Length: 96
Image (cartoon, rainbow, N blue to C red):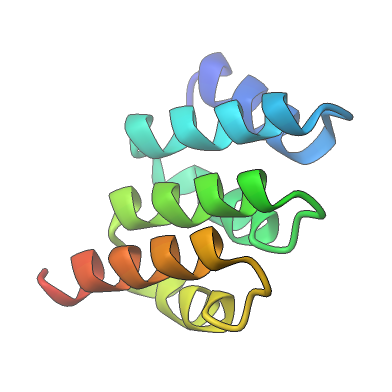
């Protein structure tokens, strides 16, 4: 794992700014490194819905069966964009 992935995970887990956490989740999804999986799953419980949405989308890009139970739990999220993104990510996972 390169330093870029490590730094993005650290930003996702520790940044006080939700925008930075959401961007980190998006970038981790784009990079597709499975090492980011635990941090992205943890971000599904973030206090900010934009971060949760970005994490759900990133997990869809990773397309790994390990994320399915957590994406299913995200269907209970109170924010509609999180639910919709979780559904889309589950659909991607179903087609592999």
